[in-house]
Image (cartoon, rainbow, N blue to C red):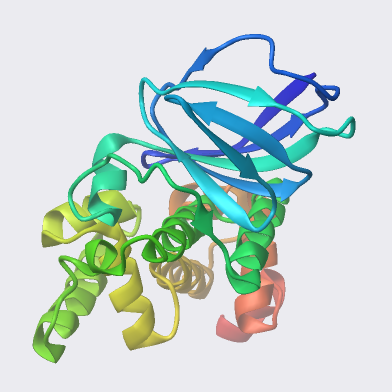
Length: 268
């Protein structure tokens, strides 16, 4: 009756595609939440009873679960429902939510734009998009949803001056220039800012995500290797950080408009 497919697990963020085919009726058992979770409803509706409070949930809202919540799910229709769950490590969630991982009890109203972003995130994860990019998008999505509950908490810790924002951008670029594999979580720790604010500040300043910047550096490493006469693309892919030879070819062609073999001839 319940199918849970994890499509991303990285840097304290876990994204799961949840499909429930429970028939109409009362839930059979009380469940206990494990961890901190934000759930977006994609299809259907159901009633969640948590800590003595009943809430009807449908695709216009997201809802939150905190570790230890006792809950039951009742279903008013026979067709079941489909959801997307985002599970966060406590420190990652606290960095988004003003230093406290305890999520709000009330549902989070979603605009159509936020709902669309959540659906696009699921599709990208199913299709094997870059995991670094998915982590940034998942954190940004959660922050947008939580802003409807308390925008001041989400904004707390945001760099307030242009100089501070530029320092963060330069810090990311300097670190990734020598260690492009550095994760968003580690970058944020090194720069003493939340992953959400670091990603948001970098994107606002450069026009692209940290993950996209990291991928651009990898492509430039490939170009250097091709210019040096390297012919084994599988070895280049492994050394530079691509999943495999075909992944390298797809990204290089997408970023430059040329295949690696054509670039090798041009750069030789």
